[in-house]
Image (cartoon, rainbow, N blue to C red; front, side):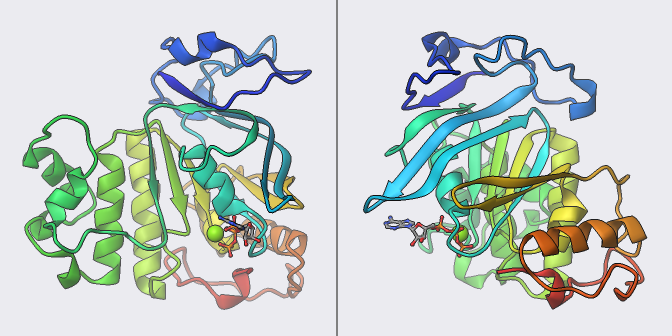
Length: 301
Ligand SMILES: Nc1ncnc2c1ncn2[C@@H]1O[C@H](COP(=O)(O)OP(=O)(O)OP(=O)(O)O)[C@@H](O)[C@H]1O
Ligand SMILES: [Mg+2]
């Protein structure tokens, strides 16, 4: 897997090693994290098990450090959810990982093949859906490439449609298809379900979970929805004061059941970390199944 290095800066514990640029020796990110043995022995760079390495990352706006010497590793095939109060810097971090913001200090190593989907699908209204899916791809990819990705997100029948004729959920799936045709090793999602109604949101969450399992890419999902994070992620991070202030591993088996008391305990713990008052785990109402729409109480902003 080839990597991108964004403005490497030599730090005391980290070498900005130019060899990372040409490193194509990573194992393809098709295995689940548990299958991959960590090979990070010298602490100097990403290993076959690491697709993202961020070290000492700082991003300031008008002399205010929104991200302040942040450290983050993401393993191949890992699903990571990122929570944090509004304005704490989640989207800023995601944009940096996507290579959309390079005005940074510190070291950021990411796979070259990465894709990003935002809360708004950002489809070009003057291009058919399939052309939107191929937008920005190098070369002259064939329509069939777009149609395969659209099929994968259940939108094959809308390939020839104009974006304005799509529902919100369909547009979001088209945006996902556009990310998938890039065959990313790292999929960056910034509140992709934020604007969807509860039922569509549950379906979209399931779809992302399935795509992740099928594709085996690493995912970094920014969300305000604690339940969504616990439902989907291997690891949930809470960002605060410019750093990853808390990390919670989610070891529950999949598919996850929000009625499971362990699920409720994790959700409550994370909400408390976010400063949201909740009824105790024991008092928390239980839901009948994972398909139940997200309760508003589980959403922090
Ligand atoms: N281009 C910019 N110029 C100045 N300030 C910026 C810029 N981009 C982001 N900021 C500021 O950086 C902080 C973090 O913004 P960011 O969008 O990363 O927050 P966020 O955690 O994604 O919030 P939300 O959950 O509301 O989406 C905010 O205070 C924002 O105003
Ligand atoms: Mg944001």
